[in-house]
Amino acid sequence: MVSLSGANRPDLHKLRIDDRHRQKKSTPWLRWFIVGVALLVAGVGGAIGISHRGRGTEVAVVQARAVGSGTSAALLNASGYVTPRQRATVAAKVTGRVVEIHAEEGMEVEQEQILARLDDAEARLQLKAAQTQLDVARAAIKELRVNLANADRELRRAKQLHEDGFTSVEALDAARTVADGLRARMIVTEEQIRAAESQVALAQQNLDNYTIRAPFAGIVVSKDAQVGEMVSPISAGGGYTRTGIATIVDMTSLEIQVDVNESYIARVSVGQRVEAVLDAYPSWKIPARVRTVIPSADRQKATVKVRIAFDQLESRILPDMGVKVAFLAEQTAETANESPAPRALLPQTAIRQAGNQSIVFLVRNGTVERRAVSVGESRGSDREIFAGISVGDLVVNGGPDTLADGQRIRVKD
Image (cartoon, rainbow, N blue to C red):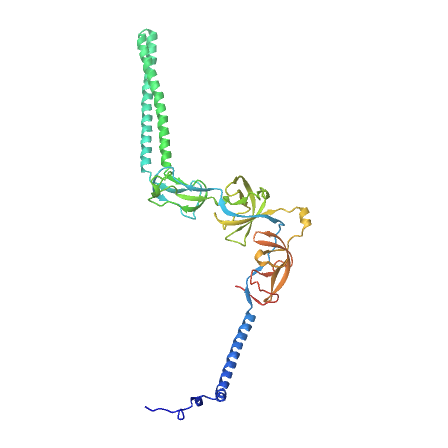
C-alpha cells in the first residue's frame, strides 16, 4: 500500500476550469439560442394578433323591426298554453272488445264519422229477439181483427133475430159479450205491439252503442285503444281495460289560457288587445283579444284565469303549445299627442346600459359603432326605440361586454 506524504500529494484545486475559458466557449451559443427563441415567440404572437385583428370578434346581430300600425304599450305580461274549447276523449257507452278501429293520430274526422266498432254479436241477438216478439204481436192482432169482424156480424144477426122474436135475450147478450171480449183483446194486443216496438228500439240503440262515432268535427290527437283490447266506460278490469278510443280536438276552437296574478287582474278587460308569442316561434307576433275573464280566483295560486281568442287561426298553432302574451293598452288621441310614437323595436338583449344611458352597437362595414338610444315601454321580449336607430339597422345582439366603438367584428352564421 502506497502512502502519499504531504509534499507529494496532488493539488486538486488546479483541476478547476478557468471561468474565462468557460464563458468564451458557452456564451455565444446560448446568446444566439435565446435571441432565436425570442424572435420566434414574437413572430408567432404578432401573427396571431394580426390574424385576430383581421377576423374580428364574432357576434350575433339583429335587425331593428317596424313597430307596426298600433301605438300600444304592454300593460302586463303573462304566460300560459294554447288550449281548445272543444276537446273530447271518445269512449264507448258499453263494455266490449274492439274489432275495428278507424282513428289514427292526425286524421281529420267529420261529425258522426265512425271511429271504431266493438264486438256486437250479443246485441244483435237481443235485437233479433225483440223483433221476433214484435212480429208475434202483430200476427196476433191480425187474427183478432178477423175474429172481431165475425163476432160483430154474429151480434148484428142476433139483434135482428131478437127484434123479430126468434131468439132470446140471453142469446143476444152472449153475442155481445163475445164481440166486446175480442175488442178488449184487440186493445191489449195493440199495447203489446207498442211495447214490443219500444223493445226493438231499445235493442237497436244498444246495438248502435257498439259503434263509436265522432261527436264533432276535428282532428284525432291521440289513439287510445287497439284492436282486440277491451274498452269500458267504467274501466272494469283494471289496467287491462281502456276507457277511451281516441281523443279529438276541434282546431277551430283553439284559444290561449293564462293565469294572471289577482293583483294585476284590474289591468285586463274583455276585448282588450293582446300580442301573443308562441315558444316554438319566438319571432312571430300573433294578434289576439281577451275573450273572457273567468269570474273566480284560485286561492292556492292567487291567480285568475283569462281566456284569449286569436284574431286568426293558422296551422302552426297547436294545442298545449307554450305561449307568452302581452296585454296592450289602447292609446287615445290625447295620449298619442303627449308622447311620440316609437320608431322601431329591438330585443331587450341588444340594449346595453352605460351608466344612466341606454346604448346599442350598430354594425357598419365590419365594425361596430356605439350609439345612444332613447327607449320606451317593453313589448314582451322587445323594447320600443324612440330615437337613435331606424328600422332595418343591424345591431349587435348580446356579444362580449368588452365591445368598443370602432372594433372589428365578424357576424355569426
